[in-house]
Length: 282
Ligand code: SF4
Ligand code: SF4
Image 1 (cartoon, rainbow, N blue to C red):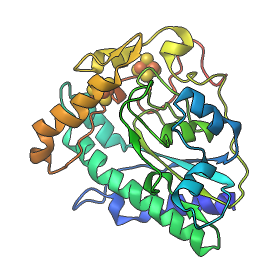
Image 2 (cartoon, helix red, strand yellow; image 1 turned 90 degrees about the vertical axis):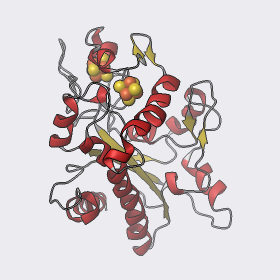
Image 3 (cartoon, protein in one colour; image 1 turned 135 degrees about the vertical axis):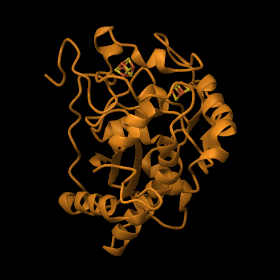
Image 4 (tube, rainbow, N blue to C red; image 1 turned 90 degrees about the horizontal axis):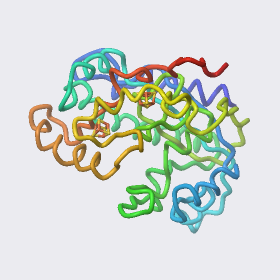
């Protein structure tokens, strides 16, 4: 079934009209990367120490969201939707606000990502399995004030890390084999699938800053100083991304959410794992 799941996600990404810019054949997202994590992987329990007690395991999500259904999740299916080349290129020349293509991808592309979550739940359910998308479950909640800043009861990034799809970075975003400019999604199911390998030495290995103390290109890309060698100031970033930017460009671009992505473009990790001095994986 691993192959069938990958094929179905890939088919939907290629064929869905909702993965296309308005009036165009061009896609928001290139072909996806897909990974599987075991739902009972100890990492999901460890995340309670790393992120906070409020972060739920797959089993807790199910029991909190659907108390009348008793099913035990076996697998977390995760995907990376790489942002199309033309959109990434358009954002490279921006220095204050995101490009129109980037903003449309953040707004309409994420709507497609939600459609993909719903589609995979329907597809799995149609094959006789239980399935649910954590971000669409009643137990999904944003947690604005936590020890790690703004967080939620389910982190798509941490799920993707568990599924072998990439590692964390100075910006907190995941650097995958197709880079850092992407959207992530996941679905949990009782279908048992072979878990993907995690081909990394440690949790931030794909970022040159953590791997060899170099780079830092993302720091200079941030217009509000939310990035430094000390890390990512989530509050400063969020205030800019969800306040200043939409106020400035939403009406002009015809979107509600515009994103930012300046620190994800014109950087060595934009579309790949950066090689650095010590190419990785070796
Ligand atoms: S630009 Fe460099 S320092 Fe910043 S996240 Fe990418 S690899 Fe890491
Ligand atoms: S998303 Fe924008 S505001 Fe946030 S850290 Fe990156 S460049 Fe700065």
